[in-house]
Length: 234
Image (cartoon, rainbow, N blue to C red; front, side, top):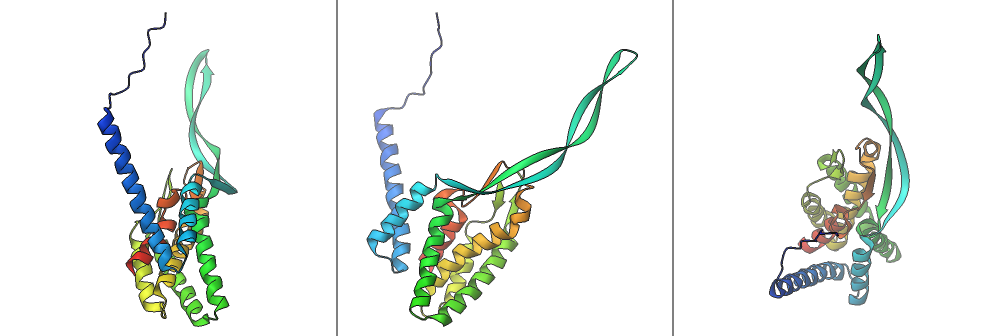
């Protein structure tokens, strides 16, 4: 007879209701913040909401784009017999480690699609001066993001959450040319992508993580947040 029992901590119905209401309120607050940021970029409410849904659902989807191989020293033990007596002898060997590099749909591809849309709008309306300023702002943001980003073994590329958006806000004010929101968003998004991820590409394979996802924390990743926070602060 099996006497095993699954013990679940008791949670009363009022507590479950409170937790559900708090989760709903946080979700509505976050969605309204994101849609407000998209609205400041000139997107209709329907498009803004669709992008928010794509970012939320896409945060669970990682698309592998590359596989890197690295070799690292490991300590092994082999058995050596002397006069019939076994002795463990440690020695160093090389172990192969593979790292899968992926792109997160919600945390990277959605922000990149918005960035591409804004760049195409500049080209369509002939805002070449604004485009030049945007490229300059992205360059500065990328160098700044690369300076503050730190490779963390076993995790990936880590960086302070609020520093890139603050830099993007400053760049939007300086290079905005009448449209600081767009400059802040593009420099915040591409600055993190280029400076933190692409410029550290050669270090990713040595971090010891089985998979590193660009935008891998979904909607809360630095690429997504940098653009959203930057637009809201301008």
